Image 1 (cartoon, helix red, strand yellow):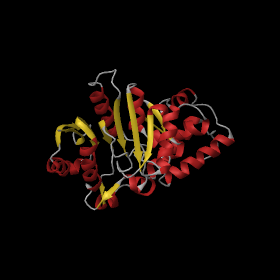
Image 2 (image 1 turned 60 degrees about the vertical axis):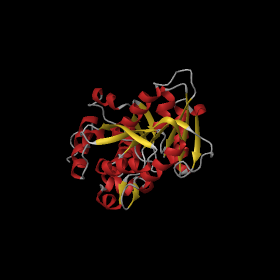
Image 3 (image 1 turned 90 degrees about the horizontal axis):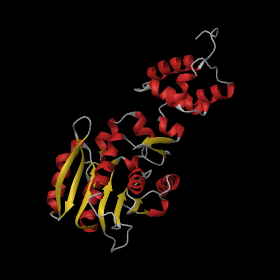
Image 4 (image 1 turned 120 degrees about the horizontal axis):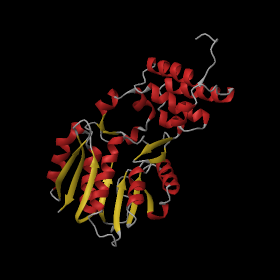
Length: 292
């Protein structure tokens, strides 16, 4: 662009939105605003009152670096190191899956179920494959009578989850355990509620994911195996053993694998599918299962 006009915040946002759109971003304006606010050290909403301001050289240099990496495919959440989830701000790194709105349905379902228990009872909840800890932290934040166990196979992911728990003041009520699904727990450990957003992408689907997801988010948090149901199958079997009688399992699923997930539950025999929560696209996204 010609250099006659100053690079105001408004001009930077317009140019960057167009640039990121040409490089494949489906949310180019939002991306531009988040990255510029990060470079300026301000809130995104503050940009709207500063359109005519000209950022200094240091801020523009930082912004250019962020924009270049975004154009190369790096997700915005990794660039700024955080993501909002269930009205809370969470730290994210490339070691963890970026929290998505669909997973909030798991949290809503979990909290609704937990509130059916007496408030003076010590409620035990397990978050399997905790990643950044969004489910575990939200549960502990909104359920002060709950004791939460957060499990992940990745030590790096557990470090992120622990940092988020500390930031939100609930670390003392969450136990962090490294393990493959629920295998790392004590043999006699039982729970009233188990929640999970497990890997549920098949090998074929993995190859069809966007470059932004496939190349930057952790494969182990996405890929379940050739069929896509491998992790859920193992989780169902373990949860059937770990749940107290009448306890519930709440799992986010791949809508394309809904029937297969239902068949796994029916075949196990110890669990009953109670309800299915649909996402905004009216697709089955979260299943609620009861231990007989």
